[in-house]
Length: 265
Image: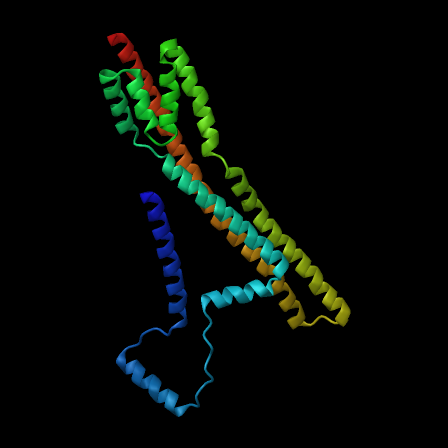
């Protein structure tokens, strides 16, 4: 959970930094005193320019969203919402699946020495994560021999891998669908622009530019959604690889402990 809170905090800091950067871009840069005096004198000599209304980031995004067309923009937004929902669920699950394997192995070894297999199984039952579940399956068949224990660990490890990778196919689907929806909106927008040109009977630069701009907004939003989901997807893959490596290393260590335990009996 600490890692999850850290990730949320980092994302919050990044979003705050982005909004701060946008606001900073709207503000004039600080100038030295002499330059400010000259600027005030120049402003006094020239008529005042009309004030430019500042637009917040939220309002700008909302405006572009409406310009892009509610239909395709809503579909792209839904892919982002569903994708992020799966991402958040996977991040929570994977962080809860992380186990201190060294501590668990030491606890199992001490339990085997002091209380036998049943004590070691109790340690696994009280420990959270796929590594403890795999250890429990191996310890449950320790009376059948080391080879059976090894096969049981490998088989149940494959089951745990499936649980870790659950939902990733949906994230990859949303990564592929979001830009496709954006491109489709662009094509349909271009068709609408050409229809407007045909109806007007003349090619107006403002008409063509406006239609192309509106059409390309969907592509931009689709690419942004795909990039966001792709970053989280790679993070999840890296997390799964880390847990898998821990599972494999810990399984080998457990087999060594069981062989050592059987030799001491």
